[in-house]
Each structure stands twice: as structure tokens, then as C-alpha cells.
Length: 243
Image: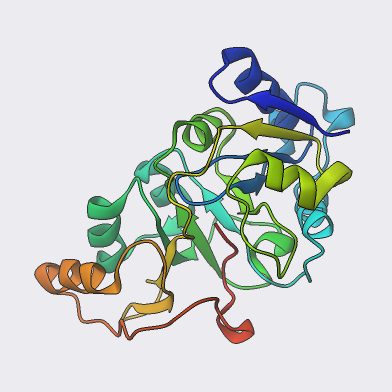
């Protein structure tokens, strides 16, 4: 049976970090829905012999969700400076994240040329999805371990998990640990905006209204194509996973 620890307990959070360090898969609360995370860099593991490599860890996320590979996965960050270390930040991304982070906004950006992400993380693309969640757990974990590859903690095609019990019911023994933070406050996945090109465009409508994002870009003087998009991203648009 998958272990469950309480997010408000310091020992529970420490156990979650150690599980990630050892190459494990951890379900954790965010400000939107529950996410499923692994550590990106196995060098953070205290014992390299038991650490999964990054590709293997991400493949475990796909297996747990019964999700087809080839769809990119978002990185949850500790703060905005982590974004600059892994991606080429555009004026659009800077304007949006300054206002909306921490929060339910995922931005797609081009990877820095000197950063080699695993193919399983990016889906073979040169772009990456990034977000700073407005929740202490993922931010603390990303501060301790670096950017965390994270996808939604539910079976592919099933409703998003809004509490630990739903995660356990859907994913069972396919993961190593569940960090129980109670019911997800937001309940709606993040809004996804592709800021990698000349004109930012909406890939998925979500918790932050499109009109608010458009207004931010208008004030910043950034031209954009934030047309309304409803629901999940299409396969052609999949450059980032949830939450």
C-alpha cells in the first residue's frame, strides 16, 4: 500500500523530499490540483545506486498515469529566478510571471542551449513548461531539489484529483508516497500560455482568466494572440503536462 504522510507535518515533508531524492514518485498538493512529481537530477540522491535516472523517473510518471509518452511535462519551480536559469525568458513571460506568479499560470519557453533536459520531459521539443505554484510544498521541494517534473496525479482521461483519497484510489501502488495536504484549494488546472514565440498564444484556458492575461500584456506593450481556448490541449498543442 502506498504510504501517506501529512503535508503540515515537518517529518512528512522531509520524508517526501527523501523519497524524491531516492528516485521515488510522490503525489503532492498544489494550488490547482494534486500533482505527481519526481526529481529531475538524480545527483541529489544521497545514494546514487538507488536513484533512478531522470528519464526513468519520468517514465514512471507516464506508467502510473497510463499516459502515452511524447507529451511534455511541466517543471514546478521554487521561484522566478529558477526560470531564468533553465529557459530563455521573453518580455511576455517576464510580464505575465511578475504579476501571476506564484499562481496558476504555466508559461512555455525555449530551453537555454546549455540546458539538456531529458527527452521524456520535453516530449522531444526544444521548449519547456514552467510554473511557480502558490503552495508551500512544491515550492519548498523545488528549492531543495531543483525544478520538479510534475504532471497531474490522476489516470489519463480521468478527472483531476482534488484530494489524497482520489489520488490513492486512481493510482494505487503505482507511486511511492502521497503527501496529504487536504482538498485542493483551486480545483482548476493552470492556464497555459506559449511565450516562446514572437506573439504569445493561449494553449489552454484555466484558473487565470484569458482577459486578465491579455490586459497584462497590453499594459506591457506586448502584442499577443490570446484567443479563447476551452478545456484540454490538443495533441498538436501538447508541449506541457498538467497541473
